[in-house]
Length: 212
Length: 212
View 1 (cartoon, rainbow over the protein chains, first blue to last red):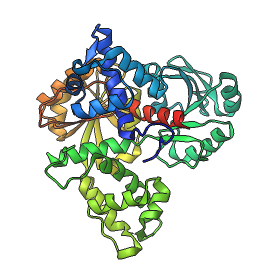
View 2: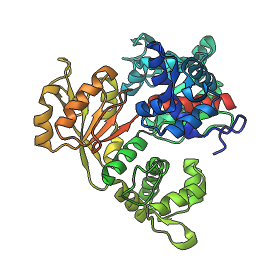
View 3: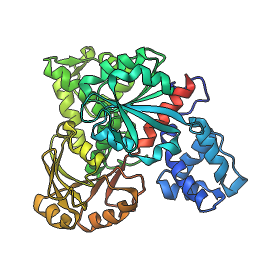
View 4: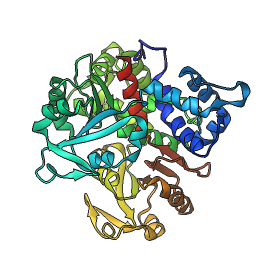
């Protein structure tokens, strides 16, 4: 949909599939495997081999003729495409159950994301650590963002609070927001918002179930 | 990708967008509005109007010529398409932070899902209630599934435990699994698995950020 117009046209669908390839490739690489065919990847991911081949070619994954893709080079190509070869410093706002679940998710570091601070207003949470991450009061946002050079905000606040916090984040200079609150955020054109919609997955499952 | 071959060809992308339309339509309906144009929906959802029009026509949403879609009828058409007009009884396995976050998510009832039981093996969790839902020991799975006529399993266990639990679920007759564990599950062909991949959203955000 023209979202990525400054680089090669790579579809949102392709981008969303890349982490699945990475997960399999990391594990094969750890086992010392050197080459990956698109059919072998298809077995692991349940994505058609032809789709996988096109996706990997689109990000410039190196291949060895018919033998398949070079695993190490393909990992580098995907990580480089997504910017996951550099660690982005992120912070989380709203340290409730979902926030705590994300703080405990060990996979983010593989994905170029390090959550280095959390914010909340609840007296029982402020000042504590969750999975080793300090919880600051939301009033400290600007200071901590500046001090720690934070770039990506992860929003796990209730829907009613999301736009207000977003306005503050924009004022603090944040350019990327990963939004888990179930509301659409209004932001200036230079701010990237990724909306997570828990109900989308449920809709897919229900449609599958009805079609069985 | 031919997933829904027994009904009209409706793409996974369309299905994933339907909950977003529902959310806006519910709120407009609550305000007493009767008609929704695809351009007005486009403003709220940031999805192109032409895509919205095709999506809604695909699920058979009733429209009034150029005036737009009838809100009440469109809500019914989407709910009916997804089976969300009947409440499916679901249960959750793994009552950690992510499990607790899902148990606390009030939106599921609008989406035809009622989580009526949770399972865990941790002594501190078993026997307690989380957001009003009782936590049973995993050893009780078969009994509770039968007694409560449960249909959909939500899997929020660590990756290492996911396949073992899945085998048990399949043996208990479960036909739909919503999997939040970051592993591919092996199931018989008549079992529907919806894989949630937290890293997909992050990949999209990173690609957007790099393209700015």
